[in-house]
Length: 234
Length: 234
Image (cartoon, rainbow over all chains, first blue to last red; front, side, top):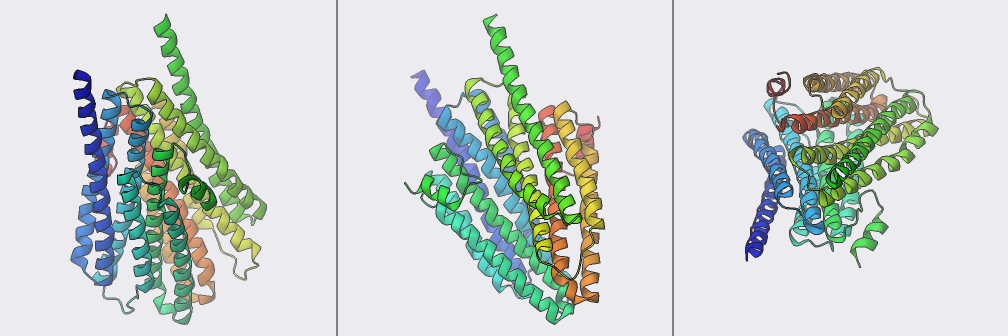
């Protein structure tokens, strides 16, 4: 009975950390959505809100890190539980960096709209990119929550789409700048936003790959789409 | 005696992982140096070499991750040893990302020199930036090796220098592009190289902050220079 109680207590602890990781995931998803909204609606207050809320994201990272260390120190996690904990430690690093990218986008929004610039940028490509990376993040967090690797390949493919979109956006911005050099400064702002979104895609992909490590015990980082397919589609 | 033997064996295991982390650190430092050399000397073969060697960096990351998991699973690391292991798990993530940035720089070098472009870029600012981030990385790895936090503040200050250099490079590139729009495409290549170098600085700073966590048990990520000074200069 003693043992069973301890084991249940252990489950409760693990579950609580898992819930915090998912909370952090929901928070950074909202940060992405708000940063884009601030940018496309010229909402400087919302941009400031995103920047302030980043401290909450950071605090959650520190907290989950501590929780994971405590569980390792107090319990003696077996293979699978240990993989779960290591997966969470890595996942929150990527979530925190996604939060950083959202903050950068918000800071750009603030910079663009606080000064009254002559050339208003268009954000169609950025919106499309954000749509994809948001879906990637959701899918990855869902895979994490359900320990399900069936979507990993899809996320990896979406990451390639985002990279392609980024290159297309860059070509387009170069065309704008060549046509009217007065748009150069603003185009660079848009370009760095596109870069931030592209990074968010990379981090979401990382998260989905940690789930494969957790479930299959196999490290598929640094492998090709074919390898990912072989590991996750069987 | 049995216990002492086990404990010594444990030390050997920890030491071996530590050595691998330092090996990985040396490798990515060389990758940065070679990527810059490829860029400034138009050496496409060296650029290819950097890209190929990135697989070695990736392999080391996977290996250290596995080693750390094995040690946690087999031993029951106490507070300080556990912090050491968690520090290593985080450090290699940043080292691997530094390797990625070096690879991006090498890829840019290849792209620039394989096509025969009309406008040859200047890399003075990039060279200065690389000089600083290379020193940051060395200092951080040295802090890691000696578990010494006396240089953490210096690394954080250098990171601010790099950020300032990046902004200065960007202003200069905007001026070039305005003066001669035909330089736009090449200027963007230089800008993304500068961005990659700036990222390398961020990762080096992360590594030095993990050492503080290891030594002081205190998490100073997401804090100000003042906080870092208080924690590390006493």
